[in-house]
Length: 288
Ligand SMILES: NC(=O)c1ccc[n+]([C@@H]2O[C@H](COP(=O)([O-])OP(=O)(O)OC[C@H]3O[C@@H](n4cnc5c(N)ncnc54)[C@H](OP(=O)(O)O)[C@@H]3O)[C@@H](O)[C@H]2O)c1
Image (tube, rainbow, N blue to C red):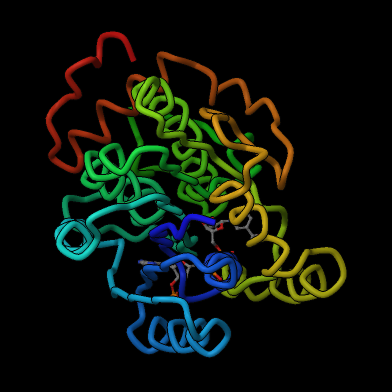
């Protein structure tokens, strides 16, 4: 088996941590990215204890700060001569409307713009690695989203669910855009809904909803390990090699929602995303 260098964001907890653990157990080199220094260190220690021969590196980065993401990209480019897999998984849901630098809504920034920026900054290295993969954790929630470009950052009508679903729609739109851009490079990119997974992401639920979520976590939701397995499969399994631009629900390809397939929405999202993170337009934006 080839030993691959795999970068996992949101690797300090939940689905990302379990995927990282599974990938380390396969013998790959893992680079963990998380927000909290203590949690990232604990995650790295866990992987080393479970898989003593695996190389594990770790970085701390707050995805709500785009300059932090730029610094992370520089650091990764400095230490990773190759990036075989990027698992873009960090995500959250802000209970109330929170703005970050530039007046951007924080859920959109953490769940879409930060991962988008990181991917774009690492893309040349990923392409140069060859036969590489990008896995983007989206959600079935993307199907409930609206994409109002006149009020992208919810000056009106912020609700956690609405903001979360919009960010997850952005994940699928970006996946499809990137897949077209990457055609012929040998790099694939796919989005995945890992299932309803019992993780800390539900900890910020409103007090009235929390008992229901806790019950659902115990009775209905799948374990973080099972959720992580959906990412692990897309990261390394042979049976999905060559598949690109797809939206998976757990381990099945599914057609994403209508809005996620709308090329005009996709194009507009790409323009506003590049502007928001101060990236120049892609050379072939006319065709993608
Ligand atoms: N759980 C589900 O049912 C479900 C369903 C569909 C999709 N998803 C998606 O799965 C992904 C992982 O979520 P999860 O359920 O595993 O939740 P989780 O247990 O809360 O893990 C989220 C991960 O993202 C990191 N993160 C959160 N905010 C961050 C920030 N500002 N900067 C950097 N990292 C940050 C967290 O770091 P800390 O440890 O420091 O918080 C953690 O490592 C998300 O993209 C989520 O949207 C989850």
